[in-house]
Length: 384
Image 1 (tube, rainbow, N blue to C red):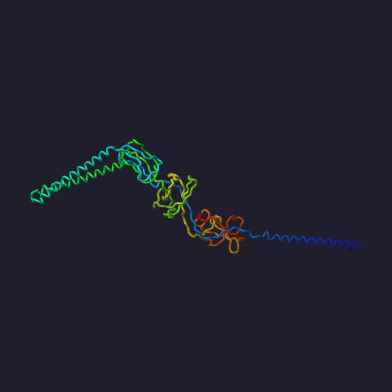
Image 2: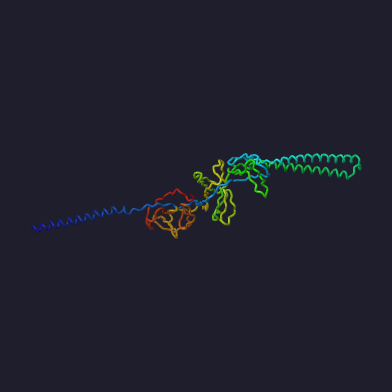
């Protein structure tokens, strides 16, 4: 009797243990099934839409400002500097008197030429009067005046008339030489150098056998030239009116826009470059000729190009991109790239407009993996 009771107790204990194990297994299975969806969550990836836009490159050249016009003024007559009315740094207007050369003998020669002109006019008056009188006598009394006397009187009048013309020419010449003693500014500008002081002996600038001393140098700094050499690879992209960004570090990193004014249509043999120029207005004379700057020229301008962000490209012998296909799966595709800008690539083949390309870290994603794409709008554009 006691033995049966013990057996029943043992069976009960064994049954309770089995039921407990089954219950624990059920709880564990439920916990695992509840955690499973969390571990199988689809990753969210950043993508960009393949779109069309204008792409271009910018090349940077070093350049130096120089005056639009610049001339060193010499005297055209020899003499002493009587007055110097300007010094370097002075702003001058076109026609303004800068210096005066003293040449006393020129005034004497001018006075002599004026006197010679007066004598020639008197001689002509006398010769013409004689000829006129002989003509009158000959008309009143034919054959009274010899034909030879008439011819001689006519020749004398013509000779006197020619002498007047020669005398007037001499007067004009000496007046011109006297005017050369007044040195004036040929255009609005700034005196950038003064070479002579009052009392200095100046040789005529037209003399080829002497080193004549100049007087002043005048520069038009109100309008500047900016020349830069464009590489032969980009000369086809240079057109009059094209914009150029100019950066002047010495003016507090100032940047302004200019346009191409002209270019040489000639490639230099030794440097394989073409000189290109823009005109820079400088009304306040803020920019000093000789300042250095950089000029950014836009080249290889591709309109309506198929473009992707640079971050989307996986570099290699054959560049590839990761595309999120219509099934939201990662697909690796080889692409052919064209123009490269600082933040965009032109795509020649391998993608279509509207495709979604993965950007950012590619190492955590594999081909065939299912993802949740999130489009990211990039603020930087291909030409910037």
